Length: 215
Image (cartoon, rainbow, N blue to C red; front, side, top):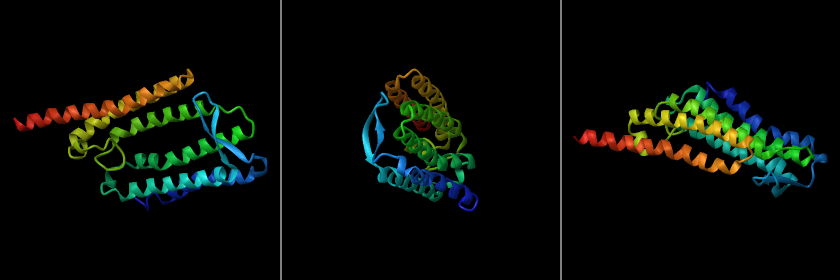
């Protein structure tokens, strides 16, 4: 997997730390304290020093990116992860880095940046794409609904991840809608439903087939 995706991985790492270089170019224009956390009304409620924002946040995201790549490659069933799904995994953090950092820079420079809308729409698109790829992988320990009864049963795995795919696509669309309607608090029940529904269906499937096997 490493040889096939070598340049893709290198590029994803460079994109992750790109905001640090942009921050250097903007250094003299950026304030000493930069808003890095916002409430649901798009009001800043957390600030970080300029050095930490420009270098610390990209460095932290780079660490997460490296961990995600290593976990995917060290997965004993990595061959069951489709190439497109793996590409999706390694590009999540770089995309987050660009969106988060450029939004913070824009707000710090006085631009009218609606952080909540940007993040909400990004999450919605992320859920939709995730839902599209979930049913397209065999059993693995990196990408999919990984619970004991799915990891031990290929049929349950396929069934659960198909249900999860539908849930994430619908949940992603709803996330975009509630973001545009400026009702971000509704994201919480949407995300809870996206997670719980596949697990419940999966457990029912497990119990049903366990009972049939015992008969």
